[in-house]
Image (cartoon, rainbow, N blue to C red; front, side, top):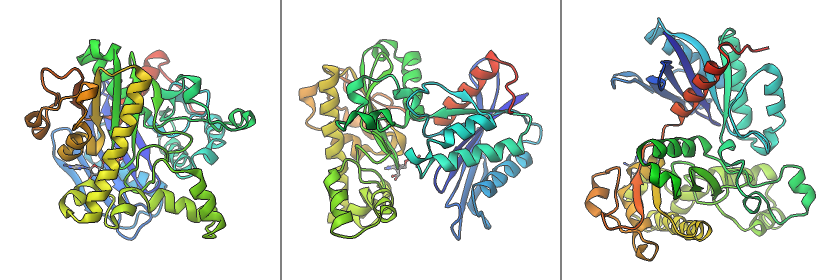
Length: 398
Ligand code: ADP
């Protein structure tokens, strides 16, 4: 039996999966994550497809991403000694202006992708470090990159451009959009389970620690709330979301903050965490019920509603609204707040279905079908690896 390992390396975390390749869809064998890489008490978790826990809790020192990969591979070797890893699929945040599909990774293509690191300095270097480490550990396996930007690459020009002098567009200062693997999963899922809706006008709200929304027609992206960086659009766990660029100028000129300090502020100290002064975690905020946590949730749902209205205007109305990501899949409160008073748009939430976390959470009479669908970015990576292997049985790293 042959297998694909999927790796999704963030700034301080590494999510992973092991999938068995079949003639049909890849089958998940195990998924897990290493969190707080480089911090004093890193966290590890892993469970197999039958739900049995393979790892949980704190681990000894995990210095960097290479050490995290070692931990992952040791766990996989110990738990699944008979697995034969023929490919490793990597989530890579940035594919630049041209790439709109997964690509095989070679040492040369990694070097090319490294040139995009200034566009995503907090993610791209870690993604590529994971790819380099995996190449060393699996010299005979094929390496494949799947990009968060790829799903949006063919969106209309108006959604690609900022009103800056054109030279900046040519230099790559564009609205790329992210969370593409999650949107691809939802689009594929809808094509299989709700083909008529898939052909129509769909807004997907990916609400996790990172959050964005995507407007789709016929399963393809025509707009996203995220732009040049993973900061734009909705407020997130610790990222600010849409911000007047004048604020950044003010922080530099008047507060004397450096680029690094502003980056730290906007990526790590803002969003739900900054507004609540308590946590980036929606579960904690829902339980806390302080004035600040309530306000943080209010701002979050207010911005989602605002973007939903904007997307409905672009699409000329909507046929389906899909919630996904940790918050979208689980938070009844957030879904209820987003949908309340949206009858003008054709949205009528079914409170019982919403409370039960059903897949369809709108009423039978609602003009817009509202759904909560668990995303599966790892499966999208595994499918891409399986597709590339099927087309070219052995890609070689050079
Ligand atoms: P990431 O972007 O890191 O993959 P996730 O998609 O796992 O994040 O989403 C994490 C968010 O989902 C956290 O804010 C967490 O509190 C929230 N979440 C998970 N389960 C629930 C729940 N039952 N109710 C409310 N929020 C939840």
